[in-house]
Image (tube, rainbow, N blue to C red; front, side):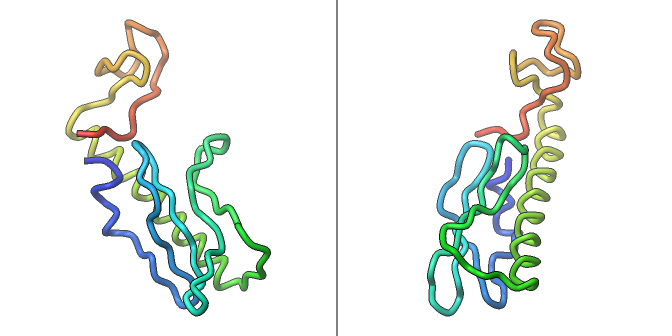
Length: 123
């Protein structure tokens, strides 16, 4: 299951920009943002661990309209929605799994790490 199963459900084409999948990681994805007219790569959307969310990283100095900013935000919100869907599907199939010891638990008795669960799996 996991995030990669749901990628076909995300909108990638907008009026002035589009997003192309450039890398699949075990738990996240990396997307390139292009200008639809010039095909210039404007930036990338990828997981930013410090903030525990997807963020936009500009690659060129550019001016973005409110509409383009809204499109980037909408795309990121779609990616975050995929993470939520994937976790729900994973828990339905496997229950909560501790990141540390891989036991099925809400508070692991073996490692006492609490409720830090795997969001995705690679089956």
